Image 1 (spheres, rainbow, N blue to C red):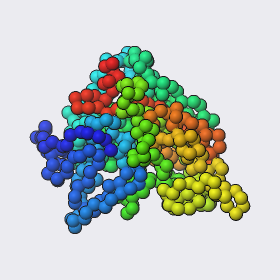
Image 2: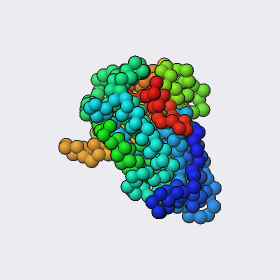
Image 3: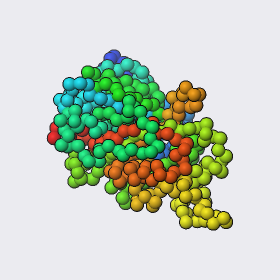
Length: 430
């Protein structure tokens, strides 16, 4: 959950009508660090990181959108940018931009100033100067906006000397089928919200603010389960029906910050509190997958489909018993099972915080679903997080024959902006 920040102020009527913030004030919504829920109705607060949840008091009144899902708010200001530790939202957009020819550091500074100002307004549930009215009657809906810089951004802005080594291009993997037009980019923006209109509204606002400085390189739309859709909050499922993200590092683990975020005093200094995002569009070959019997699917993953528990027993959180053998003497969790190969203990402790979205973009020309996972993972160093794990998966993961990596990006996501600062200021004004 994002740290620091300021609570919502009283509403203003900048166009003669009631602002979104004013509307929230009248419904009794209150801002706080992280996501909060209004008192009306029976609701759950849950975390994408650990699947935990607590049931809020039910006062007997019927819940409304603005007093439950709509009123949840993430903070713009803080040590880390939003959209990393916040619970996964139901709707998301991933977009990469390229600076236009002739644009450089000066234009990038102005753009990040504009983007930061608009993101702060939108995340607070406020209207912007050129608001389209798309989300006029909606609350913040846990909107998060996250900004990152690609490898090419540093050349375009004359800042190559400040480019971190962690942004070196990812190695080639044998299973990659990457589309260059949907990969990379100078700038990356991640938008998440629990209301589809709020997410779309933020996307349009940021695209407009790009003005003549940057143009969209690629754009992807994703989704997750809606908050409250399950009676007992749990880890998300992907389109294969599998619980996805069980082995995420947990915030209460002593090495969590070290694994996910660049420490204060780390190199480069402008990345303190930041993280590196690997973004992959992973097509799932769902027709092939769904033809597999359930027991074969579970062997491919190494976990039960029903509850995400290891094939060796227990619950979703039970550690994998990798040494346990069955009556035939073979490992209960097969040697090529995805859960085994990707486990931190099988990769010298390498770990990354997964925060993906699913996607479905209709049918391919051959009639198969163009659907899968917009994989987003966070780590303090992708050379120690994503790369070693993906290399191992690339060599022998049973799941590989059911997925296809179609696009890829790696972005340096600086720490959060403090009051009066824009995102990336410590780099751009260095």
